[in-house]
View 1 (tube, rainbow, N blue to C red):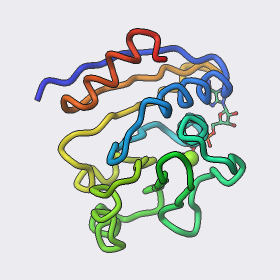
View 2 (view 1 turned 120 degrees about the horizontal axis):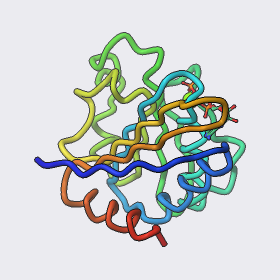
View 3 (view 1 turned 90 degrees about the vertical axis):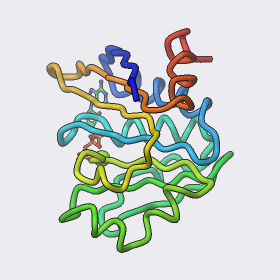
Length: 160
Ligand SMILES: Nc1ncnc2c1ncn2[C@@H]1O[C@H](COP(=O)(O)OP(=O)(O)OP(=O)(O)O)[C@@H](O)[C@H]1O
Ligand SMILES: [Mg+2]
């Protein structure tokens, strides 16, 4: 599978949230987003934006699931927010039944997806947030599969 990659710049948390919101508007049932980036890179900020784009009403509820592995938010489509940071390995995520969610009809977003690559489907959108300095971030978007190539074309065209 040949992947496509685009890089964007963000200079504030708000800009990252706005990017997420525009992406969130494009998402459909079953879509999977893998989020990668160091501590404090802005992964949860991105999830907040995506949640807004999915019309999740209670935006304050969007924070990293600390004590549970996954949070569910009600929106235009149910949003499942995983955080794999505290997991030992992918098996631990599979054991709690991630397949049922990831291959289900909601939208799944997985923070620290690089720790649990075995839990990802064959096709997904990967977003890597790279800290450049201070508030500056590079947002690398990479598509794996035709569904996500389509999303990439929207993103390339300035989203919607
Ligand atoms: N351009 C930016 N994009 C996103 N967040 C930014 C940016 N500039 C500064 N920040 C700040 O960086 C922090 C990002 O925190 P956030 O919880 O989103 O990171 P995270 O990647 O989810 O971290 P963790 O790995 O701990 O879950 C926030 O305090 C946010 O205000
Ligand atoms: Mg986080």
